[in-house]
Length: 186
Ligand SMILES: Nc1ncnc2c1ncn2[C@@H]1O[C@H](COP(=O)(O)OP(=O)(O)OP(=O)(O)O)[C@@H](O)[C@H]1O
Image (cartoon, rainbow, N blue to C red):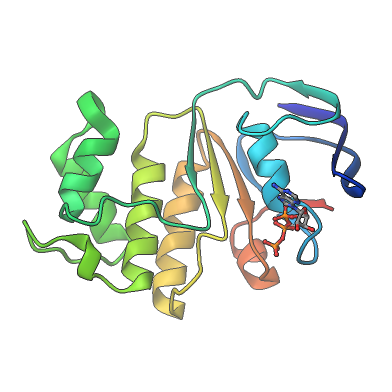
C-alpha cells in the first residue's frame, strides 16, 4: 500500500499535512502525540473518511479492525461473538486457539457484557486477527491490558503480521520494539 501527500483538515484545523508512507507485510505503527491525526489516518485508509487531497494506492482491500471502542455483541458469549463476526469463516478450533493464545478463558453461554475491559479488548483483538481480511488496523489494541496479556497480544499480532500488513496506533515505544514495527512519524 502507498499513501502519497495526504491532507485532511476539519474546518480550519489542519490535521494531516502531506503525509506519505508505504505499508507492507508486517507491523507498521502510526506514531505521534495525541491529536496529531492517527485515528483519522486509520479511518481514511479504511475508507471510512475521505481525505481532502492526496493519493491512496492499494488500500481498497478487505480490512479487519479494532477501534478505540470494542464494539462487541455484549449479550453473546465469546465464541458467539466470533461466530457472528466471522460467518462462514468461523472455525471453532481456531477461535478457541486464538482465545487461549490471548489468555482468555471463557464459559460457553456467558455473555461478554459482564467481562472486564481488558478481556473485552482481547476478544475484539481475537476477532480482528481471526478475520479473513487482507489487512488489519488496530487503534490502541493494548488499552487496559496488564503486562502478561500485553505480551500475549504482541505475540499473536506478530504471528498474523507474518502474512499481512498490520497498521497499529500505540503510545508505547517498548511495544513498538517488541512488535518490530516500522514507524510512521506523524
Ligand atoms: N469528525 C471530526 N470533526 C472535527 N474534528 C475532528 C474529527 N475527528 C477528529 N477531529 C480532530 O482532529 C484531530 C486529530 O484527531 P485524531 O483522533 O485523529 O488524533 P489522534 O492522533 O488519533 O489522537 P489520540 O492519540 O488522542 O487518539 C483532533 O484535533 C480532533 O479533535
